[in-house]
Image (cartoon, rainbow over all chains, first blue to last red; front, side, top):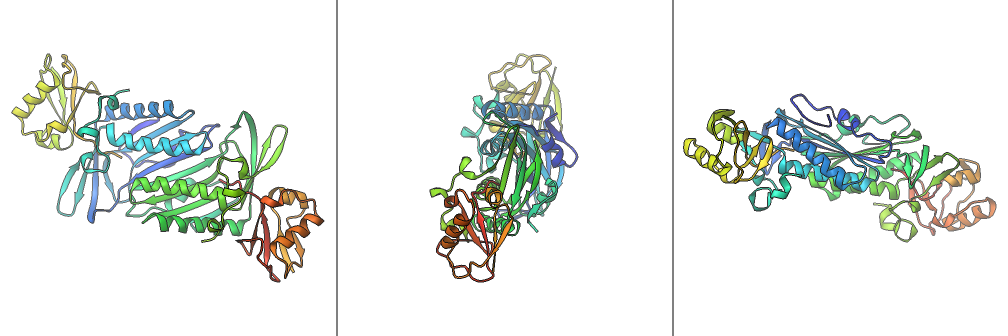
Length: 154
Length: 154
Length: 77
Length: 77
């Protein structure tokens, strides 16, 4: 159960515990939190929704990609769904590796891939508006507006 | 108290809690753990020792360096001393920033700086030997064998 | 019959989490055209499709019983 | 008088956590030479020095009451 979609608040330590291994010298975590201000606009809260069964499969795929690229890596990812307030945790990614450089690189890879291929969406609620966000509005965009075929499947 | 030397096991969550902020979109942590195998040699346990008062000052310096380089960054670091067994946690670095790329880069900067300027030493205990390690044996070396003057003080 | 799922702004537009449609024998592209004709669906060009929880290309032919999902640009993380 | 601290393999060599020495007026380099002469200290070339918990250069002059520490290459993290 290293890859989960959770309706409840995420316990960071329990995600980390899944990647503890005797040959890890480093564990990195990425904790995505709800930020109040984006380009001067004040977020009140977010709603995350997921195509849950497929999202878990895609998180598993990302984990396999990492274990193939970074030798000895172990990965665990939990993504929250539902309503999240400012500073609440949306996602926790834990990666353990023998050496520290890999732990940073592999963790970074995981969050970028989540933003490309995992069917999860957030709806931003501001004081006077609300909108489903797509990643065309984020800094990471699909090449040609959608994932390349090679990105989508293993 | 964002920078500490601890004789007790480090509680990861309590380090993370110190950097939670409303304008963080990302928190990264680095957790350094005791690895069993290094180049085929089996570690039994480690002893960490610190020049504690100076180590805390140097951790604080690293935090200030990060807050100057990465806007909006908040940092907390706790380093353990004493005897550590395999998988035990030697150091936890937590960095929060508005955007995720900075959280990875600033965190990586912290661990590299710790290995350069913070007066902490580890003694490796193998089955038939023991030795104080210096970072000349690690992948990161001082240029010219010791830190440049500009590296040492603010 | 096929279960066709909608998410994010598509769900708001359709007003349903899913529809039961007989799409068997149609390609993904043909089903998209049909849905745009029958519902007020915006932006289907940038919407990906999954068949049985795996991304599918526009020329994939839908089989009876396949679960089809329309995947707007994702925004997790 | 000055408190002079040793760490890691230097502490093992000296056999003490610190010594009480009158080093005032001496440079860091001069103190190093004196210590190597009086104790079986290996590898002082790659050892840095801190005066009052701040790194110091070899030409820094030690004042009465300064705390001096010899800092072998560090290995934390």
